[in-house]
Image (cartoon, rainbow, N blue to C red):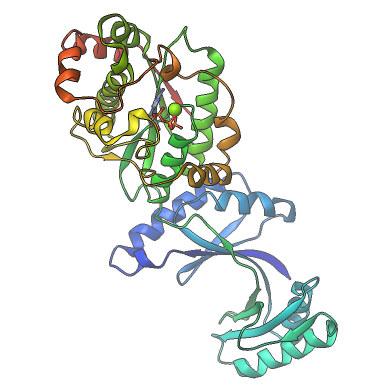
Amino acid sequence: MNRIIIIRVCEIFLKGKNRFYFLNLLETHIDKALSGIKHKITKLQMRYIVEDFAEEDYELIISKLLKISGIHTLSPAYCVESNVDEISNCAIKMCDGKKGTFKVETNRADKRFPMHSVELSTEVGGRILAKYFNDLKVDVKKPQFIVNIDMRENGKTLIYSDTIKGIGGMPIGSSGKGFLMLSGGIDSPVAGYMMCKRGMRLSAVHFHSYPYTGEAAKEKVIELAKIVSEYSCGMTLYIVKFTEIQEAIHEKCAEDLMITMMRRFMMRITERLANQNGGQAIITGESLGQVASQTMESITSSNSVVTMPVFRPLIAFDKLDTISIAQKINTYETSILPYEDCCTVFLPKYPAIKPKMERILKEESKLNVEELIEYALNNTEIIEV
Ligand code: ATP
Ligand code: MG
């Protein structure tokens, strides 16, 4: 009786002619994620089977697979020889500790096997009941769990009961490359994850204001980038020195427009970095109306300085929805570490909530925008995380 893992892929994108492209991409990611762990992968119609791994690597393999977009569900399973005793013993073991109602369902690809699928289900179900008559009952209409018997043509049978939900979505690399504006907050790492889920490869851009923001704040962002990069199959992080831009805005422009101006610079710089490095979209963690810088007027103002598409996957999310995803993907605890962000430096007392474009342009004309951008780009640190 060998422990195996069944991987199922999202079916929607498998319907078209491109399915082999998607499947090959997904297989590359599975291979990469499991590199260094002894295992074997075989394709079984639209599923993959992971086998030949050491028992102690089981949890590690599951945790790696749960970070791969394009995987719909996983089933921890066993593979046994196709004979009634082996199948029944395995099914009995699988039901150990379970309570409630169940049924056995058999799929028999091996037509040489002497029993029909219903016969086999009945036999195995009977043996399970004989063993656990105090705890289990059969219910063929609405069982609480199903013991699945999948008899293959090669003389082997797969047996499984539980399914674990994967990320879903599309394999990384099937939807281009986006540049995530990554702050140290809760939202932007989640926004990055959401785009990974749709198959987008990521790079990240972080703006920091050394010495106003310290080393710990930067380390925090690197840590967040590392966590998000597990979903993106690696990631390049650009750390842009934003200090001089902030100082210039602070010195020359109206105080209430500080954040508005900063956002416009961030967008421009991110677009330049994306253009220079194969990026096709900008991603932010903005959510409509959450703060002054995320009103319709503020978003219009920051959006108007770029031509690249800007994706805001959290635009309609409530904060609590975002937090629950942040907890699930493991970024929350890092995000709430109390280090300052460049946006808290020179924070205006009363930020403009509905900044007027005319006024923004007038204030911005006091700055040498191009020179400031050039300087920031020349002072960008690049880290492969
Ligand atoms: P987050 O939790 O992602 O920081 P937030 O709710 O604090 O978001 P803002 O501070 O208004 O919202 O930032 C909005 C978006 O602008 C962020 O989600 C992020 O994409 C981008 N952003 C803000 N600050 C930075 C920064 N220092 N570096 C890179 N991007 C940033
Ligand atoms: Mg923030």
